[in-house]
Length: 227
Image (cartoon, rainbow, N blue to C red; front, top):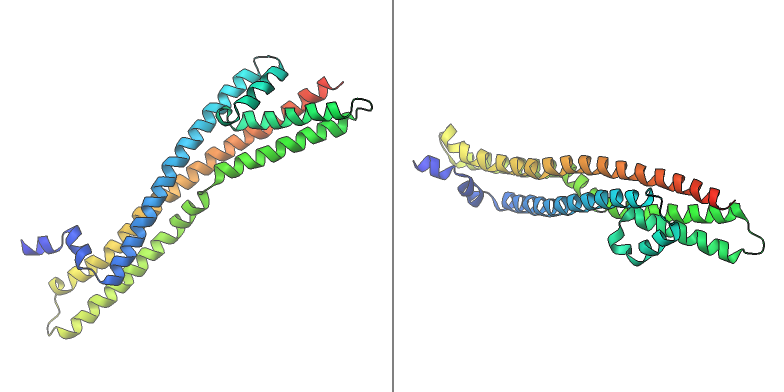
């Protein structure tokens, strides 16, 4: 009964070496922060996808582009990434035409609108990509941090055998179990971070393709309207 109590999860953590406890605390902290970013990024990507679909329905409904531009300008925070890309391109197009009333250079105006949309596109993708590097770092580094705690714990367990006349499995088992918990916590921190990073990268790439397709299609629409 005492052996089972001594080998319980909490007892092993509380009886572990100080260095191993610090490594466990670091891994738990990394796991907590990564789960915070995972949930925040999941909600952000879900909202971006929903707002993109709503704007695409409004855009391809065939309404007036100037009215849609005014609506996008007045609701920049709620409109979504694609709405802000459209607002940047349409705004630059309107300003370019107004500035070149006498000698309208259609190519220059269209290039300005396309550059404005590209800049807005890059800002939106950078915002969606934020904190993904942290998840990638946690996923790649956490197992090694946990392995460091395991190695340190096993070294400490074998050092403790020096003062024991007869070494048995019951003598060395608690120290090894304490050490292996560090590896388990490292994997607990790494696996969700890697899965979330791969999933979010895939979702953001799909959104980026939709944004790029919209930039090209909207550029063609502006070119036809400039003739």
